[in-house]
Image (cartoon, rainbow, N blue to C red; front, side, top):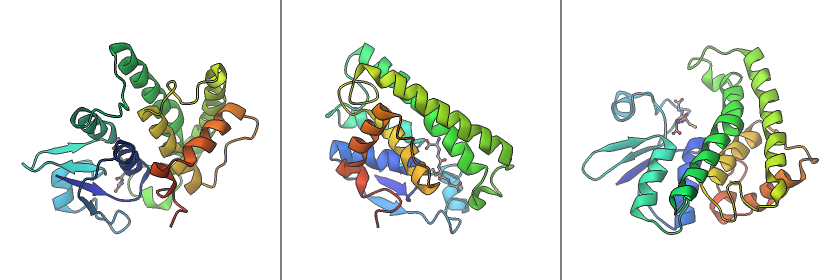
Length: 208
Ligand SMILES: N[C@@H](CCC(=O)N[C@@H](CS)C(=O)NCC(=O)O)C(=O)O
């Protein structure tokens, strides 16, 4: 088995997931900035030219960070990061989708529509980027209201993949020098605790 990796928000999700479970997987670094995701060999593995990619020993491939996490959740069930009971699994999936669609997604879009790296990958639209940043601000305020019941993690009392998707959003915040407003007290408390986790701290952009 081999995990193709780089220091990016979506690869971070898989790396943190593995670290939280205490799993070690052989890895191969891909030079994203140098075009490593656009070579014929890479595109053969993932026609979208994106990381992460997991290659099994028999050559089969899995892409998409959440799909790779699901694979490892089934192989290494403890600790559960995607839920135990049917309800828990549904709830965590719900929160992970919410974090992806409303928090991580708009921020990622803002980055794609402004960073020079993406200029030949998407048709960049600065107005759209600005609108996505405003949507992102509204979404964090919404999340802050959601956390009013005092739960320590996004989907309940323990860390789940929904928090890990939130970590990926924090990673992009750091790349964009974006900080969360102080008045979002519950979200700031979540952020403070989540940033201290050993699975995340050494993988953030300024951790070198
Ligand atoms: N939906 C995919 C998104 C993957 C993705 O966007 N990967 C980016 C890094 S965060 C990438 O590898 N980009 C390489 C490129 O654009 O060449 C997932 O969850 O894995």
